Length: 338
Image 1 (cartoon, rainbow, N blue to C red):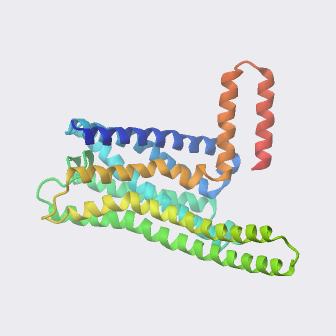
Image 2 (cartoon, helix red, strand yellow):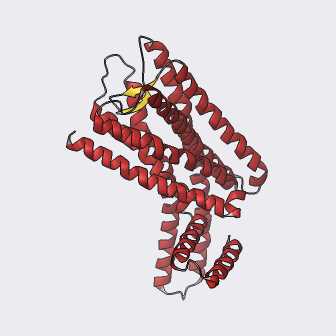
Image 3 (cartoon, rainbow, N blue to C red):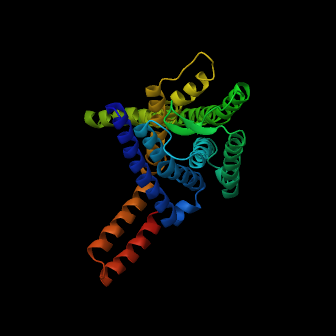
């Protein structure tokens, strides 16, 4: 056991804790808020959070143990189960991100017909497809005994067994094309359309603002400067959000996917250090998803703060009847706000 292994394992433990706590908070917000449960994006967010929680509880500790022990940490059956879940959960999480991007595209590009184009049952159908899609690939890998421990990645994952190189190469290419590539293209299409509409609206607002500033000849120069600065921030805000959604997806998943495809070539041997780093990058996406898609939004922040405040008040005043009435009143106020 050397220092890089200890550092990698420690990083995975930290990522697992952040991912577990943040995704659990998202689920609590979903269960606590009626308004969030009624919204279509809540279905995709809940599915994504469930996948991230299972990855944090099962796959990350298994990989950390493999890094420290430098060998398969569990028995063959348990390792196959963990590998099955990893294949299923990773593909499911990617497709959930793609579904969220489609929902935002419909909401921004077709705001007047959003309720008819993106219904609750449509979201359930999309989630069911995501499950079936992921389960099909995981089951196929299980039937061909391609779910094993890989020393290059120090984890139980997809791994070729025997001499069926061609079948495994075809399966790996189709699997990543149907999960990573499909999700990436969907993200790019949806969010670039959203960015185009956002820039169009910003341009219209800028024109109106400049006309207003031109008419107000007596306005103080500092006010004009603030208006121009707000215009610049408005343009940068939309670009920043789109860059976060697409950029985080590429940074976290692309190195691992490219490595898995490159190792299909007979002359490519994956370095263990790089394999572990690419694997850790994929796991880090589970910790960043709650903040990118949920907890930084105002609606989730209000519900999350309300949940935390209730827990703190309950700990400070466990038997206070007055505190109970305050909880009821704050519940009513929160519903009014949302």
